[in-house]
Figure (cartoon, rainbow, N blue to C red):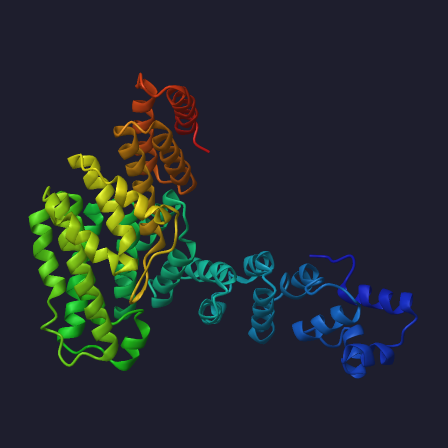
Length: 456
């Protein structure tokens, strides 16, 4: 590739325009004058650190010459990693992701770079420079797609976690892709990978997938614990204690029963994740995990009883959440659903907990609750509130929550929640008592129907 104007040309023009000698620029930039001279003559390649000093000395923005540098340094040669690596890292520091992509497109045919690119991607991932790490992982995955390597599987896992967003359709595509690689991961990463897949498929209401993955997680985590296959390295490489994955698998299997309306079977799983007699000499961190699952077991006991029609547990359930702020949101989701199903008056409860109807991140004693799962629950809550108020002939509030639920579902690409709201809008449109709201519902219903007919 021929370059009409080089970085050296720009530098020479700058010195001429400023009537500046190399010695003067050396003092200004901190670059040795001998180095400057050999760089200008083409005897020495320009390193990224030197380029940054040159750019700063010329009074230009950081990374000003990076596009040109890529062409000069990488387009027609296989650069040494000692030059390529620092440049890619510097691009990551400046968030110049497009420069990273452009550089990788020129060098990715050289398979010898793959281990270096993977190590750099892992470094950036650990530093939470996720958008910069993404194209590196993609390059490794493309380079090694026929080799079935550990790097390939872990790169696919990283791409999965980095790519997750509030767009449920995007998340489903990512989960389907990563599911093909989860069994190729090293054992500790398998536990994390299965856990993350469960959370995503759970938020998508794919309970068939969730059940299969939860059973895999239970088996793998139990084997690691029972046969003492947990080294210190393994402990640090999993996101949570290994007993978490065993107990969480039972909790998820109970959740599958709950969503299939198999409440008695769900109660049996509650006993399994409430029991921790098999944990020998638990550490302080393991005790925290155990206590959290005991708390979830109590809350889910009330939840399953309530949803099976035993509404007399509602006062006990309310007493339970009154002392546990982290449990208020999931409890409200269940209470609203039960109120709609069993015609319970919960006006006073809704007034008391009105502040919880605004979306917020959910946390437990052992970490953050999966964002995608929380979003799906929140969308269902808004639809449930709309149903409750419409049933109780408060059309204004019902319309308000339905519209909020529909907008939230659309922003998250959640078709299940959209369909829930659409059905309720249809009921409101056909209602003779809804006054002006029935007209508003008809208009909104028409607009959303167009969205489904012509998806963007």
